[in-house]
Amino acid sequence: MRICFVSRRYWPAVSGMSVYAEKLLEELVRRGHDVVLVSQFRGDAAGSAVYGGGPPPPDRVPAGVRAIGLEALGEQRVSQGQPADFAADVATMRDTVLRLHAEEPFDLLHAQYAWPVGMAVLEAATELGLPSVVSVQGGDGHWVGLCCPEHSTGIRTVLDRADAVLIGSQSFADEVVEHHGTDPERFTLLGGATDTTAFSPADEDDLGRPDHDGDGVTTLLFHGRVDRRKGVLDLLHALAALRARGRAVRLVVSGIGPDVAAVAELVTQLGLEDAVEQRGYVAYADAPDVYRAADVFVSPTQSEGFSNTILEAMAAGLPVVTTRSVGVVDCVRHRENGLLHEVGDVEGLVDALTALLDDPALGPKLATQALQEVRDVWSWPALTGRIEAVYARLAGTAPDTSWTALPVPERPTSRGRGIEPGPSAEPCRFLAAPHLL
Figure 1 (cartoon, rainbow, N blue to C red):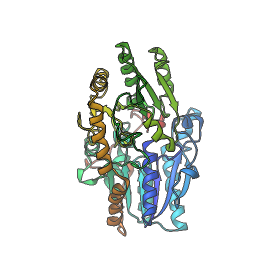
Figure 2: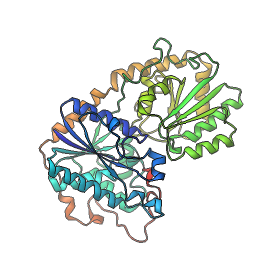
Figure 3: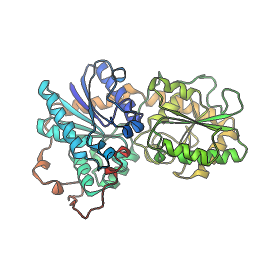
Figure 4: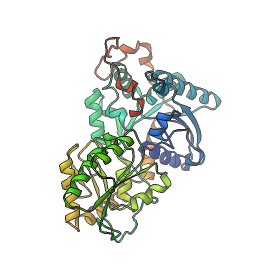
């Protein structure tokens, strides 16, 4: 098949979605598909600070994939003190897909992220008469549509009218149903995946020991998007509590994101300068070594679609401490393959980390079970096969175009009504902070 894959952001963005896109496209090409990647990117200084900036670099695009970078000019209006214009970026993505199809026709369009990318793909698919697939992977399911009437109507239209809606976990699907009233039958549950060849333990015979290099200090790792919604600030408070109790622990914060400065400020406030290293941007090829140098992986996240970093940590042989949250409970079970605490519960996080430090058998037990599971269940070939089956089912089918006959406020949603936007509506918070999507 010839597939147009439209991504919210791609490398050099530091994001689980970037890894997901790269590995999926790599597998699709290996299976004989012709893939074109169309990806948004931030080219302004503020966006570059959060995402890394710039179009998809050639050395990060899988061989055989044609990559088209689209600067998110509508989103970047915030750099000039103006509200973001998502409609302009949707139009740019849609028109790019139409132009590429005119050059050489596609068989199917796949959006990575339901908003705004999903709307661009839905509009293009409707105009071209092609089937559309939408992957719900993060903020599009957690927050979009709860922000303002316009986006509520938009994302519900995408969720209700795309020909297939892919989602990583049952708990995440349940959350989206609760938010938008979407028919649960609309979702295809996929699970997650990681590269178990690249991500592997430093020593498979010595898994999960909380001081594997013998220096007397346990190294905690936070790796990924540096965002308070991922719990990184909670982790700093937990680290301060552990050290106040005389525990020999340090923390590596690896990655970039909207709260890099907030982390640095809190480190100073808590007097943790000698205990925290902010690693900054880490190239994907270097990420396995970052995991191998750590003793424990900590992800106090508020919610996930399906956490790639947790799977990477499992594959690297680290014990995982994380939250009982959406997208996490589908792959982590308390005291079986990880330790769980409640979202926002700093004392619970401290207790979980203390349990690992005090019980030398617990870390190896958790890490060994997790490593076996990630190799058996969460592999890229298996996940790609499930996506490929969706493509095969949709090949040659016609999209639902009935929604285009109605004005936007009246377009049907799962609850049988649109939401009328108007001048009195509360301003959408993402118009001022689009990078949080």
